[in-house]
Image 1 (cartoon, rainbow, N blue to C red):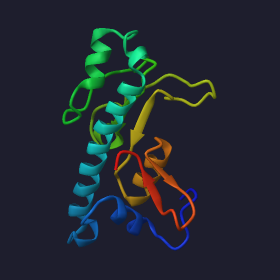
Image 2 (cartoon, rainbow, N blue to C red; image 1 turned 45 degrees about the vertical axis):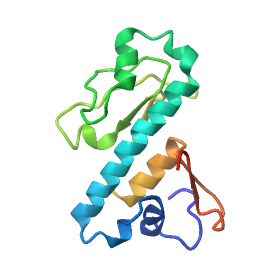
Image 3 (cartoon, rainbow, N blue to C red; image 1 turned 30 degrees about the vertical axis):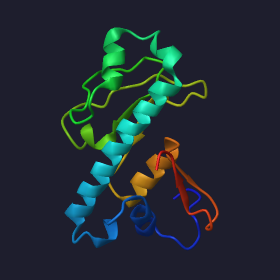
Image 4 (tube, rainbow, N blue to C red; image 1 turned 180 degrees about the vertical axis):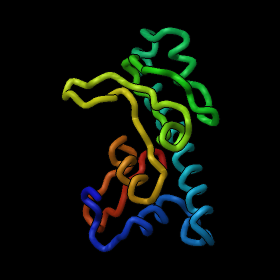
Length: 152
């Protein structure tokens, strides 16, 4: 894992982020907790992005604005996201976890594919933490800092 604080394992870090995670009895309950956390974070992060990029929202089509503000309880089914405002999605809503193909984004200036789609992956503790770092929702630092979560 990238820049993991010394002395903390993935399970402990996720327990820090999801209250009660350590009290969950089994693997399925922990998976459900990570999914709930990821979904809640995706909605919050999408809202923050929309507020921060309010002027860019005016350049989007009504359908694109609607999709950004739509509930994530039913994941969007689109072929490609070309808007400049990033779309926040959960990996588990798309292939290979479901039969729904993953939307494609556009390449960023650095050549990174899907630069305008922010993926949160609650598959396991490691993928969750890595994806949170990738979308900027968690920042790992020195052990004394542990983790800093946006909006928490």
